[in-house]
Length: 260
Ligand SMILES: C[S@@+](CC[C@H](N)C(=O)[O-])C[C@H]1O[C@@H](n2cnc3c(N)ncnc32)[C@H](O)[C@@H]1O
Ligand SMILES: Nc1nc2[nH]cc(C(=O)O)c2c(=O)[nH]1
Ligand code: SF4
Ligand SMILES: [Mg+2]
Image (cartoon, rainbow, N blue to C red; front, side, top):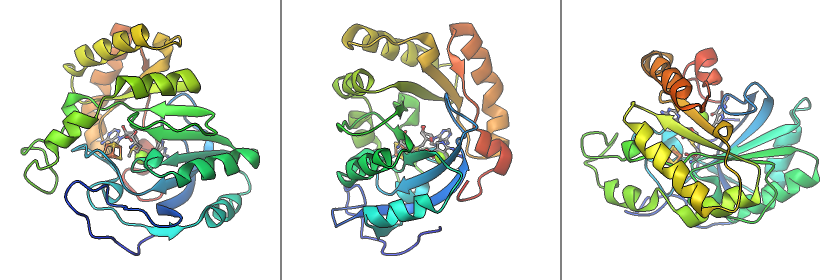
């Protein structure tokens, strides 16, 4: 279901989806989970629009930098999910799906209906809801949209992004409440120092065990061409540090096609 309607005006500093009834849905589709511990699993994806961060590399530009969506109520989302008869897994992603209070209702309803739920989140927002796997992707300094890297402006989001991207208390809440994976986007070997520091801080602060196998390294790249530049380096550092490498199966299979 491509969704492309009702584009809001984006004020400076807004998430791009100020409140209205229902959920701002950018796309809803059936694919294979491409990333993480359950990569390969047939899954329905619900992609909400609006984000509190602005990674320069965001592969979902139309949920963050230029949010586009239709407003769907939870019943409508559930109806569309149940159209995919073979799916037992639902991935709720974005944008930042936990920005929207209504996402908690969606997750509770999906769980009541018997689905396994994964939430893909940047780890800056906590909600008490029905999540079987929280896939946390904390954003590293290398994700900051500096003037040189900003995809559409002059670095206006850089400070706000840098201030918001890591919130240790919220990361602790998430790993304490749910089964989790910590999925870091690797752009360069230099990212490893920050990843190790953050994992150490979390191990100190959180009342949950964080195994090396809960730490996943994912190569940056939203195209096959870019992935071919980052994946060997990412595989090497995964072996060096004992963390798990995660592919981006959907990019390998379908490149940057929408609804994959
Ligand atoms: C679009 S984000 C949506 C969920 C949430 N906002 C987040 O960042 O975790 C979905 C996943 O794609 C990853 N991602 C986004 N752009 C990427 C890129 N260019 N290369 C690799 N991973 C990327 C994010 O880190 C996250 O794990
Ligand atoms: N196939 C596929 N797997 C994914 N896993 C996480 C995704 C996301 O955008 O959050 C994603 C995605 O966009 N497509
Ligand atoms: S946090 Fe996620 S959705 Fe938001 S800009 Fe970064 S990658 Fe995109
Ligand atoms: Mg994606």
